[in-house]
Amino acid sequence: MVVSKEEIMHIAKLADLNIQENEIDEYAKNLQDILNFVDVLNNVNTDGVEETMGVISNSNVFRKDEIKEFANRDVLLANAPEQEDGMFKIPKVI
Amino acid sequence: MSREDYEIVIGLEVHSELSTKTKIFCSCPTEFGGEPNTHCCPVCMAMPGTLPVLNEKVVEYAIKAGLATNCEIASISKNDRKNYFYPDLPKAYQISQYDMPLCEHGYIEIEVNGEKKKIGLTRIHIEEDAGKLNHDDYGRGSLVDLNRAGVPLIEIVSEPDLRSSEEVDLYLKKLKSILEYIEVSDCKMQEGSLRADVNVSVRKKGQKEFGTRTEMKNMNSFRSIVRAIDYEAERQIEVLEDGGKIDQETLRWDDVSGKTFPMRDKEDAQDYRYFPDPDLVAIKISEEMKENIRKSLPEMPESRKERYINEYKLPEYDSNILISSKYFSDLFEGATKICNNPKSVSNWIMTDITKELNEKELEPSDIPFTAEELGKLVVLIDKGTISSSIAKKVLDEMFKEPRDPQKIIEEKGWVQISDEGAIKEIVLKIIEANPQSVADFKAGKDKAVGFLVGQAMKETKGKANPQMLNKMFIEELKK
Ligand SMILES: [Zn+2]
Image (cartoon, rainbow over the protein chains, first blue to last red):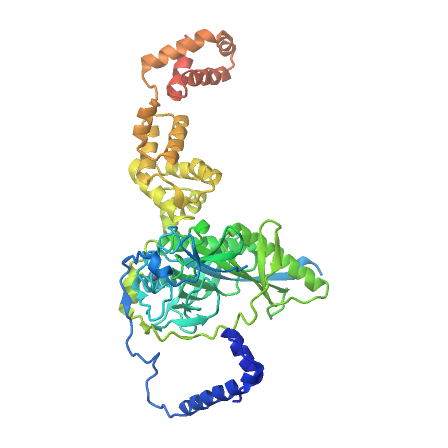
């Protein structure tokens, strides 16, 4: 599988990254390396190996439905570049 | 070709907020309202390094919804990340479920023109709600409130089995009622706790393939949904009849103009790049867990209806209205237990209570008084303590400031006059004042009695016992 220029631009857009024209080749090469590695993994013989859903084999880690209030809005908003009326202020969204 | 040559095909994705006490992945309260960003913590605000832990009630409620809608429950399920950027989504991904939802292959039965029809459910999965964007006073920026971020939702996806806006309305009402009965969501439309994405397409009758569909997102009023579907289907048919083609796009319904408009869809919006959330582990549902949840399901509306017809001897019409909402149904059963007069309770719910709700644009869940209080009101009428016209005034009072109806009539001095001496005194006074009616009666006009009773009721501000008045007027006039 070869990563095309269009795919790089598409992925960059989805990831909200500004990629310059002259950077595309570099990104394509890096991504290609990753895909090649995944290809190696894809070709490992996994006959008889049980399927997993992630790196952790645990299941059913749940929380009880009990309220614990954090109750410190100032701390939560402390790093916001701008705030107003207890809310994060951001550029206008239509 | 004309409109009759086309068939409308509709599928719905309904989002319903679950009525758990806490959010899906953190211990913040889900309570509606509250000062902005006060129901938040580092987890639901997506602070780096925080980890989600799944609320066990969310899994239980979703399975409950699945069992109540005839779904198969997965034995193994997981959470996935749905990636997109929007300022109301602090993590830049929503934790949802992609290929292994908790429930699949269900159905809901509706009754269309007296015939039962099954509407297939593709799946029910769990996910988190987003926050809310407010606008600042000067229109210079947006303000983000994350109180709703992380509130648990179930998304109920239907098959494209619906064929008219009427069927959609029936389906939504049925679904809302099921969710209320099993107590997993309070379905308050005005708080956005039930909302739907509506997919509409049209095709020529007899055609196998579906037409191209358009989608209207985030609609939270049944009435708007019905209007939007009718408009959109009509629009699509017109486009096709003019030789045009339908673009697959997201539309916005405008309630004021009654039209749909294309939304400038975020490009590539459909490319969500789902992948399993590595912060969460698999959900395994044992047979035992499933059975325990199944046992906890309450009696469903269909079974209640049977009981109302057979045990309480109510007409089917009454029964259908009562079971249309869990709140009506519970109110009816609770009040009937107190007064043992099912038909009277049913009448109060279907007429005066419904009228009051409609006038105030309230839902059955907003009824402020208890079933016990309604039951006591009916007892007061049945015992002759108050007339039914006074009872209506008591009911008004119960809506304004709910309290024991006995207390209300004492406070207001509304106890019915049933004392024979007192009634007689009134009757004689009215006869004295209305010689013309007396003459009419003697001349054979029985209607005159009604007039006199009316006068007596007016005189006593509705407090006299009308049956006693009627009887005593006839006695006196015949003398
Ligand atoms: Zn939280």
